[in-house]
Length: 48
Image (tube, rainbow, N blue to C red; front, side, top):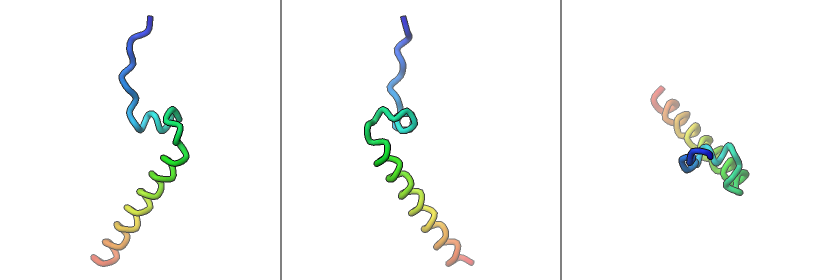
């Protein structure tokens, strides 16, 4: 008998593909990362 696994975190579900919307989640995460990078680059450009 197996131990009861803790509920998967969204990050684990993202890797395991159990959510059923893995492609949408990947696009969402990629877009968020891109937006953060753009904001950081703009901030650095203004500071320097």
